[in-house]
Image 1: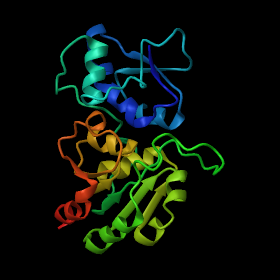
Image 2 (image 1 turned 135 degrees about the vertical axis):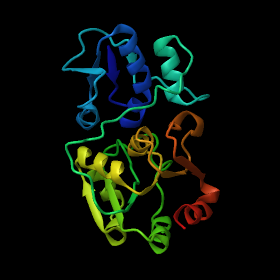
Image 3 (image 1 turned 45 degrees about the vertical axis):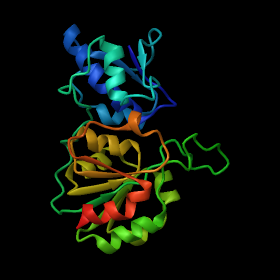
Length: 244
């Protein structure tokens, strides 16, 4: 039994998917997974190696709160879950939402996610608040440089924290995770912070530049073949190189 822990959402759960897939192969059956957050569950509706369960029938064997600080979490969790050395063929997974038609226009997708941030201003802020999000000045610079139409997607709290995206973007899609996944799937390029949808892009091997701020770097990397990282002292230079 695998648990998607309520305090460790989409990005952390994606890190478990290589291990879940390998366990499914070894046991020749789907692996029971209990999701605590509905939007995370919606990212794995089509997964052929997971069996969604409505409740925990027993204490979970593994959980998305399994993290470390020395190697990428997808490698760490794979080795703990399977007892085997990490194998690159077990890539991270997220649904490709084939029920949504492909977007015909080429576009640059922006992400600036703040997963776990409540819409209620009086609620406590998540522990990573202030360590991930990118200030608007960099997105205005992206607007100046980009030759592509610009889209933005995320949650309602993302757009509440980034209202200026409405001045920058040609299209905004909020509050529907399946549509967000389709925008990630079809984007020509993606610029993002360290957020769950960036891990979705890595699972899909999308061309993405992740602007890294102050969250732990090594553990949070994804195995995407086209994932690029930019440390905060290099953001402006790397954005220019990525878009030109």
